[in-house]
Amino acid sequence: MFEPYCPGHQFRCATDQQTAEIDRPSIEAILSKADRLQRAAANLPVEKRLRTIEEMGRIWRRRWESGELDGVAERLAQSTGYSPEVIRLEMSFVAEVLDPEKMMKNLESTLRGGAASLEGMVPISDGENIRNHPCGPALVISSGNSLVPPFIPTITALATGNLTILKPSLSNYEAVLAVISTLEEAVKTTGAQEMLDLLVVSYFSHRSEVLDHLLTNARIGVVNYWGGDPGRGEVSAKGAMNPHMPRYFVNGPLTGFAVIDENSADEEAARGLAMNILLYDQQLCSSPTQAAFIGSMEAAKRFCAMVGSELDALGKGMAMGMSDDGAFILQCSRKYVQFAGGRVFSSNDTDNMWTITLSESVSDLDEASQSYGPLAFHNRRRFLEVIRVDDNERVIDLIGDLPDNNAYRGADKVQTIGLAVSAARKEALMPSLPSTGAYRIVPLEDMFMRSPLEPYDGMDMAKLFTYGVYQRDTSLGKEVLD
Image 1: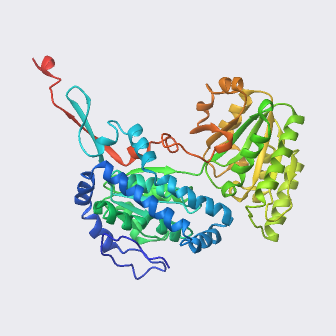
Image 2 (image 1 turned 135 degrees about the vertical axis):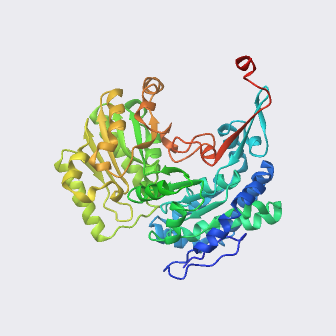
């Protein structure tokens, strides 16, 4: 059982819960101080806030590299089902979120007035100024399929001065706490106690009365939910009842789409595609689950075989593990795709049981999934559908139509488009790709990587946790009023 963590406050746990949750009187006591705490944090120099985040990163790296967190990593691998190799990679990614230079770039590019607008009024024109102020308290309800995503909104909320209540999943609670608790040691070095006072971490069950209160009645300014239905619909409905009208934004289930043309279908493209399939067993919103191959069927077959060879080579060190029942279900899935007309490339190694299907022009997986329920989107791991097409227009259609494909029910739409195409093909595709609804267009080989300058699922995260206070020195109405 994981205890709540809020070192800047006293609290008690609810006694009627099977899991340790902070109780309602404790939450109310903390929220009653929110305005004062956020004012104090908003007066911290941005440089001091970012230095604190940098110190968190140093502490994390020291603990990770010393082996202190090996047990946490092992238990995270067991609870998530990811291979130990993937978890070790994820642990190394944590430092990227705690990089002060990247955070500064994000704030400068995101906020009108730049990062300086978080600590005072900044001129935006003659006699006109703006300051970005925290709009919390913020409630972050994070997912459990990865360690890094909970910290993207949480660190942003803290850096912008919001009282932040983070609800991790049970599957990653221990690891989340191992990261976020570095703040307690960091403020001893930087003196930014105000940031520590902003942090509340607690698990809440789906039936938690405290969570219901936070959503429906508490004085909350922002709710950020990570995940799909039915949870997000329930959270949305409850938040709509809250008289304080909190902002609500969702990071829902999305997926990735790869585009390869015959001129670029080389070993580098095959290796990049294979690595993105293997990372997190395609559970990331950026993971490629469908691909379009522009070229001949023979070239498409050669490329699928090439990707399969890379999956064999790379996947040996990233064991997924599969039960006998799971292997049987997967074999049935492959048969249904073949019955629907698709060609199947596959491995029967239960530690690396990858599948690539190849269809002509349309998705055979769509038809197969209508007949075979276990082919559902979130049940497929290391499973890529490749569709051979003749032209760019068909690529655009496939990306835009993916949410209507029965085999991808559960994914809202495509988040990331990974490109491995010729320069001429890219130039021809680019005018139309944004109209597909996708949020990111990146090189195929690093679909999982993020720049500090890019929005998160189409949203600038720092803006979601702040509001702009406008101040003007001169009257604009003299001519109108005279």
